[in-house]
Image (cartoon, one colour):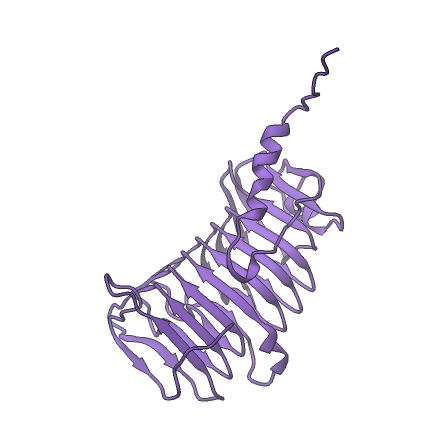
Length: 289
């Protein structure tokens, strides 16, 4: 007797959707998000209530959040994301404005294919990762025009990857390590790759304490400097493009404490070959992450 396999509705679609969780590179590569949870469908652009993004993000169980609507979500307060969540904007165009996303003491979060624009108010960061959050992956997002930072990674948060994101129309872009007295931030490890920093003023990124791997990024026309290292920071810059505008300082070194910067220059093209100058003093060399 021939046995027929039962085919569940949307089984193939669900599998291909969740395949995203295995594609991260770098320090955030172990982030699984809501891989082992059910789908949560966002059906409204309201700030809160049933079917809202906020309702899904606050739930404690693992969830893979998808959108059945396109449009703008006006956040009235920070959107707190709990552990084991994937916020997957693929297939729709979702814009978040007003406030940003906060990941506090959580782990295994994936944020994909969202647009962030126009965050207003004191301490209005686009994405806050603090304290003690880990296994975070931010992928294919567009971020611009917030009153404070676009991405802040501080207070012992680690194992994070930022990939294929577009940063524009902003001042303080990415902060890694917030204070020279927070020695616990020595655990921070961040990978930033295949990102486009287009006309942002500074912090691509600005690093204290953490270990940061930058590769295959394109940074152009910054307003103050491209990358800043200080306070025991260790930065490995590999195969990046830096195209200066009027401001020529590419790498800025602050002498709060020691730092280490290593750049790997490719023989062809414009990779890590700066259209400007280095600024600062210290020892530059290899470091094994």
